Length: 122
Image (cartoon, rainbow, N blue to C red):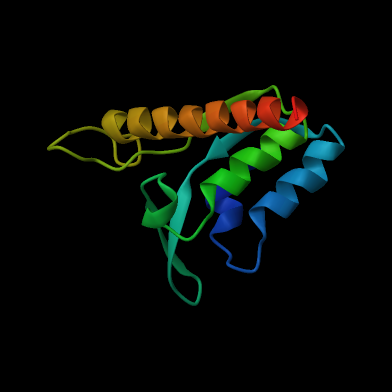
């Protein structure tokens, strides 16, 4: 089993994250997930961005939908966090940004669940 990190794998623009999640998820090989967005800055250059899809180059809705569609029920962590709002601490572990990311990912999951229920009731 793997710990699938969308930041690490998604830092390569050639990697289709929803496709990778579906590949391993359908085989039940994802033990846990670190989910975040990245912004491409050129060849082999990127930065971790806020989780919100428009803030980076990954489609967070499609990423979360891939986890949902493959029946993932493991641990999802909003990976890393930028230091925002004058926060001080260990770089990469900003509490405020991770909390915002967690709420964003939870909101996407709830929307995907509700969309699934609506489509099944039609």
